Length: 153
Image (tube, rainbow, N blue to C red):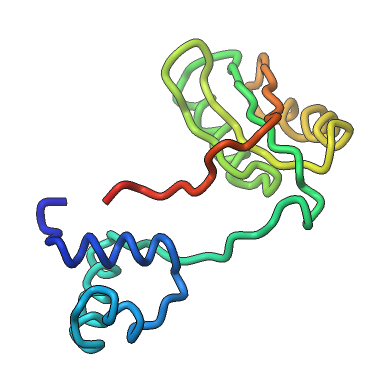
C-alpha cells in the first residue's frame, strides 16, 4: 500500500465508483494525459490493486429480493471438514459469499432468494446438505442500509 501515490489513489477511487469510465475521462479527472493514465491503470492491474470489473445487477428485478445471512456451525472443526465444506460452498451458485469467522460459529453465508419459501428450499436442499453442517441460524435482512462496498483508498 505504501507504493501508491496520491494519483494512484484517485484512480482507484474513481474506478471503484465507475468501472466503465473511459481512459480520457479518467485522465481529465486526475489531471494526467490519457497515455500516462492508461499506463498507471495497467500497472495497478499488474500489481494486483485492481482485480477485475463487473456489472452490479438489481436483485429484485432478477427475482432475488430477499437477502439472507446464515451462521453455520460445523459438527467438527478439523482441516478435512473445513476443506470439504469450503469445496462444496464454492460449487454452490446460490451462495453469494461465504466467510470463515472467529467466534461462536464457523462460517457466515450470504445468499439472495425470491422469498421465504425459496429460502426454506435453499436451507433444506442446499445448505443443510453441505458436508459437516451441524447447525444454522438465519438472519433475513429487513433493510439494506449501505451496500456500496467501496474500500477507503
